[in-house]
Each structure stands twice: as C-alpha cells, then as structure tokens.
Length: 363
Ligand code: GDP
Figure 1 (cartoon, rainbow, N blue to C red):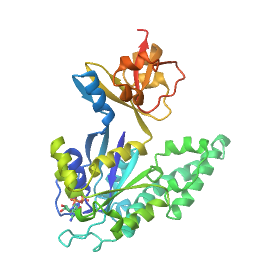
Figure 2 (cartoon, protein in one colour):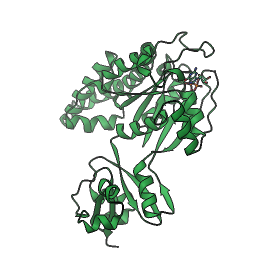
Figure 3 (spheres, rainbow, N blue to C red):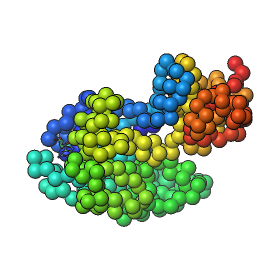
Figure 4 (cartoon, rainbow, N blue to C red):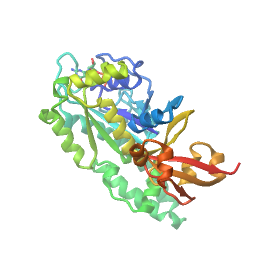
C-alpha cells in the first residue's frame, strides 16, 4: 500500500516527508535536494485499536501501516528528461495513489521555482508532466497494437481503449477523468498509468491559516481544481507537522489543542490516504497482541484470513465475528458473546470495517 508524494520543488514535500519519517530526508531551501526516492512508513491512527489493546490488556499493539514514497525532481520538462524528472516518473508507476503537495504559503525566503505562488499553474505543470509521461507509454502501445491487432481480432477492445486514452492525453487531460466499463477497468489496471491513479491534494499553508483554511485564497483554488474529479484536499502546515511529529503522544495532544486542532494534518492525511486506497481494517485481539489488518473493501473472510497466514486461508472453516461497535458498547468480548452478538460466518462472508475476528481453520 504505497502512495507517492509529488509536487514542484520547494512546496514542502520534504518537510511533510520528514514529518512522516520523523527523521531523514534533508529539507533545505534548494530545488532537487531530495535526490533519491525515499520511503516512509507510518501507522494508521485508530482509536478502536487503542480501545482493544486496553480491553484485552494486550502485550503489544500492531497498527495498520501505509507507505509514502517521496518522489522529488518533478519540474516543467521532467517527462523530457529535464531536471531529475524521468527517473522519478518510473517510481510513480509503482504507487497506488498520488499525494500532490501544493504550495499555499507566501514566504519570500523560500524560492519558488516558477517565481510566484500560483496553485493552479503549479498543479497544471505537474499534471502535464504526468500526462506526457503516460502519453509516451500509450503512444508506443498504440503503435504496437495497431500492427498486431490486424491479425488478432481479440485485441480490438484493447486497441479501442488505448485510442480513447491517447486522445484524452493528447487533449492534456488525465486518464482518470474518463469513464470506463468494467472490462476496460481490468485492462486499464494493466497499463499502470500514472494519471489513472487516484489523487489526494495536500495544500501546504502557513500556520496562521490552519484553523481557518477557508480564508486562504490559495486553498480555495486547490479545492476548485480538486472538485473536478471529486478528489479530496487536506490542509496542512508542513512546518508544524514537522514539529508535531517528534512529540510524545500527550505533548502532541496539548500542542494541537493550543493550535485549536483536533488531530494533526499528518493523521488526517494518513486516514484520507487509507480511505482513498479503498482500504478497511479488521482486528484481532488477545493478551498477546491487538492488531489491525489491512484489506481492500469487499474482501471475503478466507482472503482476509490469508493476510494473517496462507495456512489459515487454505484451511479456513469459519470466522467468529463481532462488530467493534458492540464490543465498545458492552466493554468485553464475553458480554458480547452472552448477548448473542457474536456471529459465525462462512467462506462467502464479506468483511466489514471494524470486524473483530477469530478464524477457525484446519491445519
Ligand atoms: P520540497 O522541495 O518540496 O521538498 O520542499 P521542502 O520541504 O524542502 O521545503 C522548502 C522550504 O519551504 C523549506 O525551507 C521549508 O522549511 C519551507 N516550508 C515548508 N513548509 C512550509 C510552510 O508551511 N510554511 C512556510 N513558510 N515554509 C514552509
């Protein structure tokens, strides 16, 4: 479960990434300072897991995690190999969603590579580079398919789809704006296009706007752009995130309260990312550990069990399932059982976010 962080130089990617890793990548007022794509792993904040840990008196808590790739070097002309671009475009192909950081702060001391703060232009520069990168790949595919589809009619649907996408990209539009049939979706996934991946925008604002982002004109511009494809916008202040990320939990709460915030921008971002990827969590809990397991929405019980161990998927008999809501309400697993709220579910059961599960299986 990887997301790639993109954006023009000096918009605050490394600052945000530092908050993600709480150490590491240099943040300097210099374009291209992060040369290698870095990976940061963060836990997904989940109060339910904290509750279960306490309830079961678990020795260990294992949260769900997601990974962020810091993809630096995207500038105007990157798809033509300018800057350090082209190398990085290949890294974006590996991610499942894109986090697009947009500069929404004025600061004379921080150079803007395009000389002024202009979120719309900045977003369009990055999008165009991604579009051109996809266009290059798809044009090659179109050329090859046109030749071989003459002798292999089974390839015609793919050829039609590729034509449709090439046309969209030539009009400087991202592939995700098109509508696709289920069949087309299957093919599309195999193309691994950058502009078909879901996007989450991060508006990086100055501290003073954190509790009133709607008063920031730049944020509103980002929101307007994002609304075109129903993408979400998360407002953060990179500098504050960096400060928050090194604090202990209680200090963190205090600091956020002083700022009038309920949770950090990073926590918001992590949660939104999880959601964007269509991920949900189920839990296992006991004295040894309480743990969140990540699955895609729509996953059935045996495959969910397979996340724990392939043997449990293979030997799956049934799942004993309780809803987090019931457990939180009644306070203990035994109270839930007594009330008859534990269900026995079979192979066709589709997992629900917040299920607490014990799998029964043959070894
Ligand atoms: P990157 O090139 O996109 O990775 O940008 P950096 O994270 O290196 O940030 C560039 C500069 O902007 C650094 O000097 C940061 O301290 C500064 N910066 C990052 N976020 C903010 C912010 O929210 N407000 C202000 N004023 N400066 C910021």
